[in-house]
Length: 115
Length: 114
Image (tube, each protein chain N blue to C red):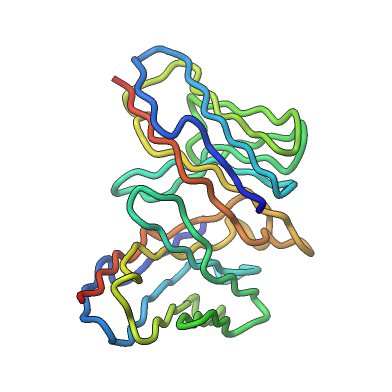
């Protein structure tokens, strides 16, 4: 079955280190997204991509970057991790249809702790 | 900017009851609305996607309605079961039908008592 997988599922890092969270989907979806989920804030969009070589900033993009070199993968990089970036990160993908967003499918999440 | 509100924030009911979860959004120019379920420590599972041209969408014991003009959607759960315990979130596209992500409500935390 097609799926979307994230790795690592849990990571602890130190302030200032670079961290990369991987996201891989096998649906061949054009659209991919990264969200973070925090108590009191809910889900907030970090970055998104419409396809290969395309990336766009979301609501809370400061301190994060993404790259899209193929359809299947959208890695999220924290350039210099900060304690405020301790969160649960979710990757999602969708296939647009007739201009619509299309149904959104999520990975299981990556829990990041920055000490 | 689109804003999504879900009421109530939490709900606890005995098994077997029918219940309604509410979702409201500020910008009615949406192409669709999606309901998700999230279990503790897990990702979001898509339950129902309602296109703007539809008024209802059904899947098993779940029925979602959409009233664009009033900016409201409801998720109806029939004959609730303990396995329905989870957080339910609704979400709408950020801008019209564009593929620039969804705006989510903060969810309704549902507990079904056995």
